Length: 167
Image (cartoon, rainbow, N blue to C red; front, side, top):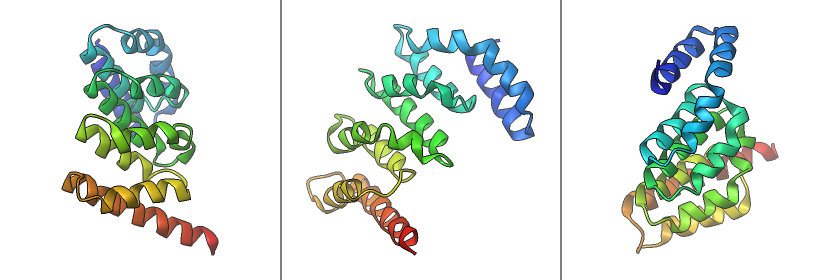
């Protein structure tokens, strides 16, 4: 079985609610996942970052942090997709890497990576510095239209969360 096949099996186990079998599968693939995240081939690293989310491996957030620093936009994108997935019910995952997400959203050389970083920020706790960054990006006519649109939507969502938290 390949890592991709094991990750697909993990998703099936999550959907079935079989936590015991998922824990066993995680244990079996832990070392391979770690090695894959360090592979010289960016495609193998990107698959490893995606697999972290598929395995619901919250203990591997340090690997995702490394993925955000990867030279390959594909790896940074895969790490961001995994981070977004893991943080849907756990904002702490995103909050831990907020400064890096700000940096990626503001100045990464790849537009898709920038947009994915912004999407990750929607799962974060609403912080004024994040809202200011997103508002600034949404109002900057020199930015890509899609980036401005997603920044505006996420900034508005975070503002609404701020209002709900004050009630």
